[in-house]
Image 1: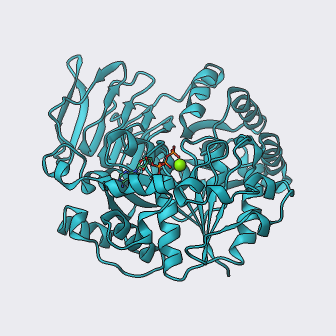
Image 2: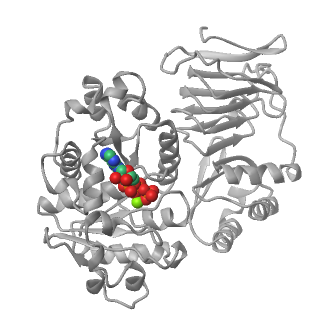
Image 3: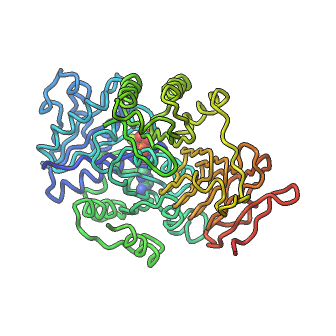
Length: 264
Length: 223
Ligand SMILES: Nc1ncnc2c1ncn2[C@@H]1O[C@H](COP(=O)(O)OP(=O)(O)OP(=O)(O)O)[C@@H](O)[C@H]1O
Ligand SMILES: [Mg+2]
């Protein structure tokens, strides 16, 4: 059997893929899951910074793929959470350094030892996106409640659907309930109406994300921040637990209806 | 498997998967050349589904040439916008589409294009284009950024919010119908209309657009 390969992608850049990967990795590891996060954004690595593991890098993804380092040597173990590991991106290479086949092989090897292999995809729909989703068993789409982000997410969902993978699931990030109430931001229901895929969770806009990113200390390491709690609930859902959607998730009854609608 | 074949009422659905173009083309040629398959493929109308793979002009030309060897005609393409642009460029070299006039039922009472409708049973998403030399029926939504181009009618059992062109080779009798008709742009034959800004999505009122007196009008879809 082995673990699941889950790719986090979005189409549009800067919507929170890396933030989501780091925090879901932390939240899953805190619940005892063996997790490896792969930074697939070759040339623009930053998952290591968000996880606070930058100073521990010796080898990277491309070193492992090209055989200069053994898989074991490439993985960085997080001292805070023994179950959490990072395979960092190469800094001085570009996205042509890796092929779909190589990523599939790598993830197949990792699945034997980990419960979750999380792949942080680069933005866009080019090569980097393709080799990131090639090994995926499950694809998570990160979207912010903005028209342009939703449009790009829709495009990416179409590309994933064309690949005979299981239907992608959605994370709505940076939600601001007060703006939705004033009609200044798309509501959850507006986003779901267009994308019509299963909602995995909603993460609120949270200043704690910014400070934690700078410190390399993901919010999901603690329980008190709203975003950290939201990522923890998403991690639980990824583990198959049935976690109710919170009131923060805005539109209340409507949302319940949607999550039921899309449950298989 | 990179290539799949499926016989449908509308024609032969050929789906091309991932892989190096040269290999895909060779495999397709080998499949079409199998002696046992000759009669099955000969004269078929082809619906080409290219999924996430963009097809370049030269690649499309190779496909069309291959189909021609087997007396097959490419009538529909479902895929990426880039593929559709390639299709536009080579279309001049294609055999002229059959004339598909709507409504003028023959003696049997069956409209002539009834057998050529293409059924698309999914959400057509941003960046995807569906083109068909007949009527297109979508069961699902046509999202903003998606496009449906049909030589016949376009019927959407869902929300139509993308770009739609019915009667694309000049048939002004074509219609567009949807459960929610709020397209970004709507064309019938040579006429163009845009949904007025005050038409908010979400109203489930089935409507039909058609050409009446030199313009596109929208009316309630009631028999
Ligand atoms: N819920 C949130 N609340 C506040 N800030 C957030 C939230 N999620 C992400 N951010 C901020 O948004 C910025 C972009 O996030 P991130 O780097 O995770 O996006 P990305 O999708 O990985 O970007 P790229 O496409 O460049 O890889 C960061 O500065 C991050 O701190
Ligand atoms: Mg990133």
